[in-house]
Structures are given as structure tokens and as C-alpha cells.
Image 1 (spheres, one colour):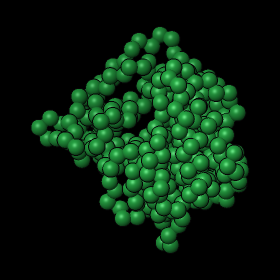
Image 2 (image 1 turned 180 degrees about the horizontal axis):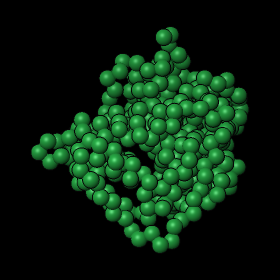
Image 3 (image 1 turned 120 degrees about the vertical axis):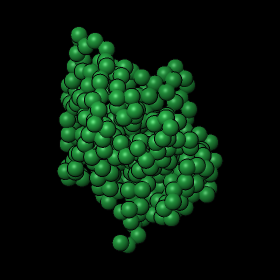
Image 4 (image 1 turned 30 degrees about the vertical axis):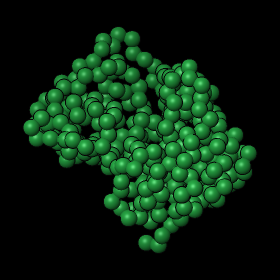
Length: 314
């Protein structure tokens, strides 16, 4: 396979970025992954790992020439904190390096903590958490900077990403699905903090990568800011996810997994994430949650510490 253009992935060792870097490398892209830390590192020689602090832009001068930057960001999650203006200066530095296309990984939680009804890309933003508010702020800063510098930008409002993590053993904070699977494997018990009817849209990692590759292949229109909802084909619930996780663990250890949860006397309304726009660009992809859960189980089993059943030291 001939080498494709180099892609810069900011936050390339994080939960979203690390697996994306490996996928892009497997598809023939040369990848530069950046993070604030030197570790963990990739064993793939096609993935170059460099330090970059997005808050100070320290390390920008060492980045190789790329046409596209994918930003999997650090976000300030304190609602009352003054936003740190890192997006605009970072975009300016990237443009100086010759980058002409920006892809920002945002979240569906910019629509609010309890969104209702059909959510398409024109739905007004109404973030209710520090996490959602930080992403909304970053989206606005990116759109303004892209327009100012005449570059193309895509904003991906992602649902809850479900999939294996190549750097799982290094994490101090696990993804919430890894946490559920860990409980199911080693405690035979899943304890939910939310009511089981709490709606969630679950995005299999392979489907996310399918959409991402289509974005990278399309012709960049400068300047233009596109917004895409990226999620699974339907809205599920926390309870439904827990049952599926439990069944996956039961198929491994053969013991029933019990699910405990708060009383659910007032079910929350469902929402429906409209993903037609990204699908019209990429075409249908494989929406296989079961496969992704089996890969998460492998993450846990491969890094098991025999005497405790928990993860081994990093």
C-alpha cells in the first residue's frame, strides 16, 4: 500500500487518539501523534510520537509538515472557570506549518445533559456540564479561527465511544465501558450510578474509524466549517448496555453477573441522534457493539494481575 499523506493527531495517546493512530497507520497513513507526556509510546514505526502542550504550544516547532490535524482535545471541565484560549493560537500555529484541514473531536453533550427528541446538527447547543460547555467553547473558537485563516474545519459531535484501547494498561482513568466490564469480570456485579433508563447513544470504534477515513479522503473546501453528528444507529440505555456487558462477561467466566441500579420510577425521555449527514459522506459502516465489547474484555484479561484479578502495574 502506498503511503498516504501525513496526519497529525493531537492527543494521540488518549482513549480516542491512540486507537485512531493505529487505524490510520494500518490504512497507509503516516501519523504524527502528540501528547503532553513522553509516554506511552507506539511500537509502530509509522507512528511518530512527539510532545506538544496545546496550552502553551510548546513543541509546535518540532512538528513535521502535514495537511490535516485531528484534535482530540484536553478540555477544561469547570463550568465557572474562565476558558483558556488555546484553540485560536494553536490553529494559527498549525496554519503556519501548512495545515489546511482541521478535524475537532467534540461531543453530543454540547446538546445538554438530558437532550430530548431528534438531535441533528442544527439543534441549538445547550450544554449543562463543564464537559459539554468546554466542547461548545472550543467548537466556537475553532470555527472562528478556521474562518479567519481560510482553512477547512470539521467538527464531530461524538456519542459515547466504545472500543478497545491500545494503551489501556497505562490509564489511571478508564472509559466508563471499561469500568462496567471490569466490574462484570472480577466482581460478577455491575453497580450503576444512573437510572437504567438513562439514554445513551453508543458508537462502536470501528464505525467511528470508518467515518473518519471518509473525512480524510474528501476534498477540503477552504474556508468551510462542517458539523457532523457521529454515533451508532440507535439510542440505547445505560441498563441495556449493562446487560450486554454482563452477557459478554458471562460468556467468558460462566457466572451470572448481577446488575444493581437506582430506583427507576421516573424514566428519562429518549433522544435520537441524527447521523444521516456523516453517513451520506462515508456510506454505511459496521455497527457492531458486541465485537467492541469483546475487544474490551480482551483488554482486561490481557492485563490481569493473577493474584488479585485486577490490572497489573503500569
